[in-house]
Length: 348
Image (cartoon, rainbow, N blue to C red):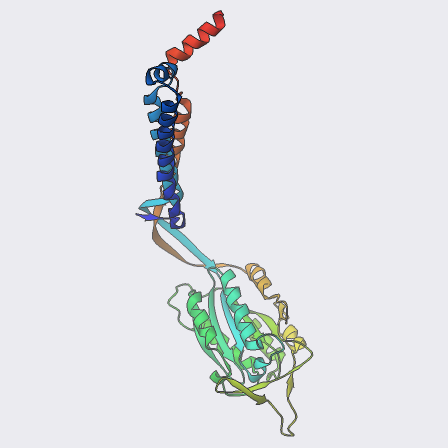
C-alpha cells in the first residue's frame, strides 16, 4: 500500500480539531446551563433535544471528515498490469563545441545557452530515442540513442571545446557520426525503418564542407535535417580560458582580436528540407521543433508492461459524503416533541 498525495498528510489534524470542537461545544452548553438556572428546569426546557442523537450526529460528522481526509491523501493498494506502447522517432542532436561557441554575445555564452536550451527541449520530448554527437573540426558520439534523458543531460554537462581539439566546424564529419549513431546497436528491437532526424546546434561559423554534399547524403539516408543557430549576427570576440578563468581574447596572427558572428545563411541552407530555429540573446524558437517533429511519421518501437497500484480514494470519499449526508438528515429534536409542537400550533 502507498499514498498518492502525502503532501496532504497535514489534513489529518482536522480530525482531532473537529472532535475537539464538539467536546468544547458540549462543555460550553453544560456551563451555560449551570449559569441559567436549576437543572430540573433546564431539563424540562431541553426535553425536545435528544442527547443521543446529538452524540450520533457528532460521531457521524467526525467519521465523515476522517474518511474525506483519507480520500484526499489518496490510498493506493492492489496492483494491476498496464501495457504502454512507445512511439517516437530517432533524433541525433549534433552540438557544435568549437571555440567560437564560447563567445558571450548570448548569456552566459553560446555553448552554455545551447546546452540549456537542449535540456529544456528534452523536458518536452516523450518516447523519442535521442543521441548526442559533439563536433568541431572532427566529431564523435557523446551519447548513443537512448530514452534515458537524465543520462543525456549528464553528457550535455561535460560537452565543451576540450573534447575535440581539432579547430573548425565540420558539418560533414558531424553528419557522418550522426549516421553512425543511427546504426549503433541500442538493444531496442525494430530499429529498421524508423523515422530519423538530425538537429544541428551551431553558430554556423568556419564550416568545412560542401552543403549540397551533406544534404545529398542525408536525403539518401532518409534523414531530415533541422538546425538551430546560436548567437547574434553583430559579432563578438572569442574568450581564451586557462584553469577556468578568462585570460585574454583569441587573436589572429597579426594580433588582432578575432570576432565571430552567427552565420544564419549557412544553417538555413542546411535545414532546407527541415526547419531553422534561432537561439538569440533574449529569445529562442527552438521549443517549436517539438511540433515539427510531431509532423514526422511516428514509429512504434516497443511495448512495456508494468504493475501499478490501484487508486482506492473513491470508496472513503463516497462513504464520507454518505455519512455527512446521514448526519445532516438526523434532527436533534425528538420526533414526538416536534409533532406535538406542530399540532398545538396548528390547532391554536
